[in-house]
Amino acid sequence: MSDQVKIVVTVPEDAADALREASGNAGAGKIGEYSFCSFSLKGTGRFLPSDKANPAIGTQGQLEQVTEERIEVTCDKKMMQAVVTAIRKAHPYEEPAINIYPLLDVDKSEG
Image (cartoon, rainbow, N blue to C red):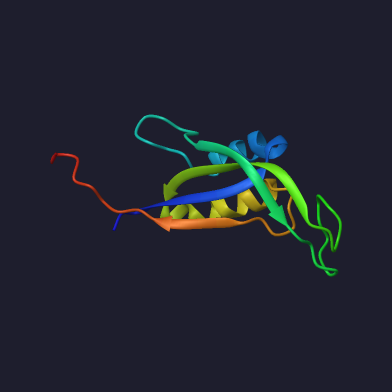
């Protein structure tokens, strides 16, 4: 296993730049001599807020669709919590969907 993780989060497209900046400022997206590296895809997020939810977008009890960006960044495991904290602060949703994947080591000298 590597000492790196990939963090994937979806966010409304109007908040994507702020989220990328926050995660980069927290140390995510460093690859060699480059920083603030990320990858994004646009898609549609769908959700149904319960009657106990406090949705930033949409209404309780009504199915909602939002154009979102899926943002992927890598970071060292030791920085993971700081990056997730920064993402949560920059994210407009009450419950952002954040996925974290361990990365495998690949020997750069082979292949």
